[in-house]
Amino acid sequence: MVTIESKEAIKVPGTNLDKVLWPDEGYTKKDLIHYYSKVFTNLIPYLQERPLVVTRYPSGIKGKWFYQKNAPAGTPEWVRTFPWFSSHSQRYLNFIICDRLETMLWLANQACIELHPWMSPIHHLDKPDFVVFDLDPSAESTYEDVLDVAEALHEILRHLGLRSYPKTSGATGLHILVPTNNEYTYDELRDFVRVIAEMVVQLVPSQATVVRKVKDRQGKVYVDYLQNIRGQTVCAPYSLRPLPGAPVSTPFSWDELRHIKTGDFNMISVPLRLEQMGDPLAHMITDPQSIKASWQQLKAAFHPVGKR
Image 1: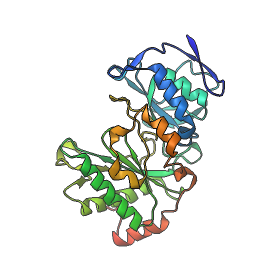
Image 2: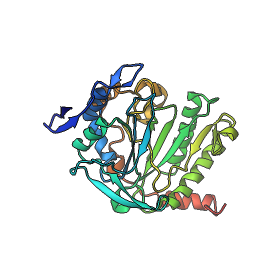
Image 3: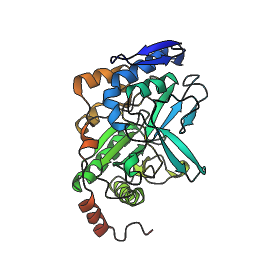
């Protein structure tokens, strides 16, 4: 066991730091810890006050892995947790709240690669701070298809007077985030997102679909609105992904859409990008928007909404 020390002289016990997690690149647990310590200032707004689900890869990205919702035995007393009764498992889960660097370093030392916070904070769990459109390409679709679908979605959101923020998923797709000001529940917002997703399909029917079954998507980009459910999560901005190259789910500006590729953002490049450019997503949480007028506009155009 060694001691991991941050810039703030925070000490967290660290073990097996030379364990290789990304075998093709040789990136180790020490590299994982170093990455999260460097980006934590930018990462914390998307984690604090939110129940956190992580994926752990103790044997590296090619080994066995598991989701962790409940704080494990041996969790330090200084790690903040939040008890929540799960109707699915009929028990209380103690979610970790990652609101300090020590907690992030402790999680990274457990080989927690992916970070999946809730879209709502603990003080209003039923009403999310943002909704997400997950653009998921099929095996037969191209990255250009994803970009075309993203542009169609952006145009619709602009027409509705809504700000939106794109980020890479860290895999092959894109996430489009739309901040809200907690007027509506997950169930209400899911109808809102569904109608917009269906409008995207109408604009680019040869490239987009809302069909859930993979085999029925006809090689199109899936505009997934079903992530907008209480208890569902989306990969956090600046979360690493357990894929070759150590990619990172990275926010970018709409002006960059046609100038980037998802492989541009990884464990090595993202800290430098943040130093040079800052976080394009920084104002999403702190500057919410009302969707009330846009929602009324959609209801008028697609009446009755949510009655299918």
